[in-house]
Image (cartoon, rainbow, N blue to C red; front, top):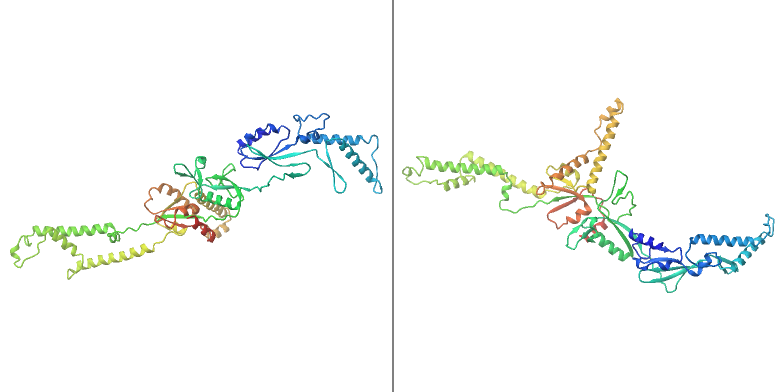
Amino acid sequence: DLESIYKLAVDKNVVRRDVIWIFMHMDLEYENFDPSLLKHSGRFLTFNPKSCCGIISEVECSCGRWSKGVDEYIGQTTLDVLERVVASYGNTSAPVWNCSSVDKFDFQTGFYEKMTDILGQGNNFTLSTLDNQVKEIGLPLIIDIQDRNESHAVEVGHWQNEFKINKDFKVSKLKKIYRIGIVMGLPWAYFVYPNGSKSVNTSSKGKGTLEGYFPSLLHELRKRMNFDYELILTNEYGIRSKEGKWKGLEEEVIDFISPYIDMSGISIVIRKKKTTQSIFKFMTVLKLEVWMGTLAAVGAVTLLIWMLERMSPYSYSNARHLYPEGGRQFSFGESLWFSVTSLTPQGGGDSRLLAFIVLMLATFTSNLAAFLTVERLEKTVQSMEELIRHPKITYTVADSTIVHRHFINMAHAEKVLFEKWKNLTLNSGAQTQSEYRVWDYPIQEQYFHILQVINRGFAKVEEAIEGDFAFLHDTMESSPLVLPSNKEADSSALLAKPYSPTKRTLFEKIT
């Protein structure tokens, strides 16, 4: 019965909106339908009891429980009427005529008149006279149409050979319904829980509230454009399994419309170098070994002068009588000061010492100028080629993402092309092989090496937190996280598509 069918449809989450589903009772027991089951309003088509006996060709019509469908009853009633029409001719043989006969329409008129007479004697079919005095035969059906919910019912109209709407019923235009798929990700779509935490896990969607840019955009578009939608939430763009099944969203299976915000590709996110302000900034020009060697030399000279002052019998401390005009007493502090001041070329001095000092000062000055110049002119990585050639930066992607799949597919394509090239050269003749050997392999094998670096980079993420590290990710997810006001990171598009003013305007609105 219809009640059990409706329960099954609700349990399977098929009935989710009002006045979308149309239910038709094929019997007269529709009064037994429990209206409390209607979670959403539906449109119900029921047979009017007045047309019951016209459908059932019975002598005594009780209009009880129907044992057959209405189509079978109408078919049987139609056959009964035709049999009565044929029986009314008695033993009259069927007329025969040819193209020259002038009375061929007489039989048609007679057949029509007999049928209308028989139909007029019963209540199986209806007869109505048209404007041209021709009688029209109608089906013995009256179908009532109602919109029902669990509390009340609204009479829409009825059908009796034509559809008639009640004057008091207001026809409302149904909204268009779109099924929209969203790949979960911050800040585009995510769940917010009562404790304030956020998650993009679709398995817990019943516990949190869906928020983000896409839900807010859809809500605003629904108000302005008057439509409804159903969301399909997933964490994957879509891949094809070995069994040939798809999961997630995939353009090869779903015919997407032209996007309003096109994907801009893959971006690289690098930690910005912090420029520390310190009074010891000048010391970063030379390596630690140079400074330690200089300090060791000053310390050794200081210690040697102090020891000679203490142990030499001709020093001022041990032989003051040899210096009637006075002398310089080299204590440890005086010895240290003498060693430090010798690094600055003031006045005359030994030529060998002067050459060493000038050389050290010139080296320090030139290195300081070069260091400050390079620090100002240092640029971020702008392309994949620059990232590959960079000697210091380690890079990787998030595991099992669309970006990771992109590099896997590109590396696989390079491998397949290389195998095709190898088979082409090895299986050709000797003369052809010599022609191929003139040329280098025409395809640059970069994605294979990139994938190797990415796989090694998974283990180096923790080690490179404080060092030079690049993160490759989807621009649509990484761009809002790396805003111009973020002083900790810098983002550059690697596989960017052409500039779009509309996309830029929308991006500025959401950021």
